[in-house]
Image (cartoon, rainbow, N blue to C red; front, side, top):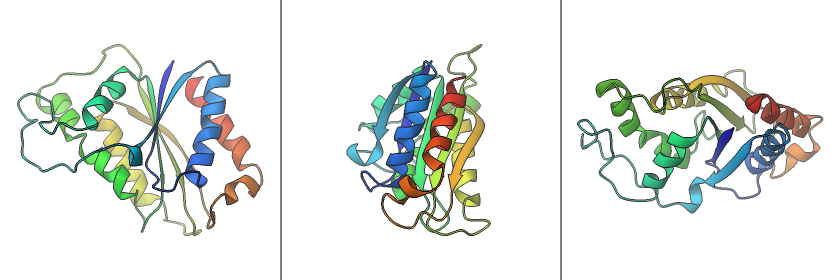
Length: 188
């Protein structure tokens, strides 16, 4: 099973990276083939709302997102990881999702599905510094609808509150094991 892991955290080796690495361990242990993509290492321009994708289902901007479209098409599972910034995903994650407008056009305007007959599932991994009851709501909705545009069904999330310092998830009771189990479930 091909699992694409997309990390939108600008902080390398932070809590989102640590958790995603545990998710990857679980996915590999369950027999998955994983690929990690760090959005901060790519040149992805924002969507300019030009409408160029409406007739072809292809974005007219030529940057690193073009390669990501192919990776998304080949994936059977995708995990989007982002910390919470002001009740939403990071700018890098939102830019990536916005550029999936071309995929939305392909699916809904042109009625072209990626791979008929293949169950494609998407997941959300997020960590927040605070413990607010509604801290993940905005980000979860953004990811849910982004995954739909990418032609993945939303199949679950791993959300962790109260991780307010770099690397603290390593010391949070059971969170790395929980992330590993989440990775195993994604492939299973």
